[in-house]
Length: 83
Image (cartoon, rainbow, N blue to C red; front, side):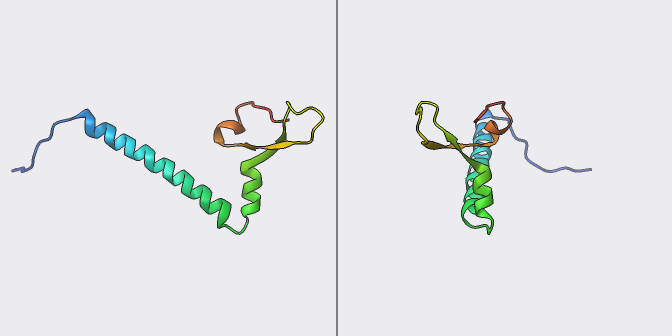
């Protein structure tokens, strides 16, 4: 059996470049999905209600001032209370 080919040498620089590129693509995919879901889809108001939540500002006592709280994946099940 004859095998022809070229041997390669491992280098950490291309490894880190590929890992960084993969993470950047995942970040871009998340942003693009958010844009499509929040601005293009028919039920965009439903998704916007699920993604963002209005909460009262505790520093503004007696005021009904509300602020927008982003409820991303890291905030949903972390035990953080928004009541």
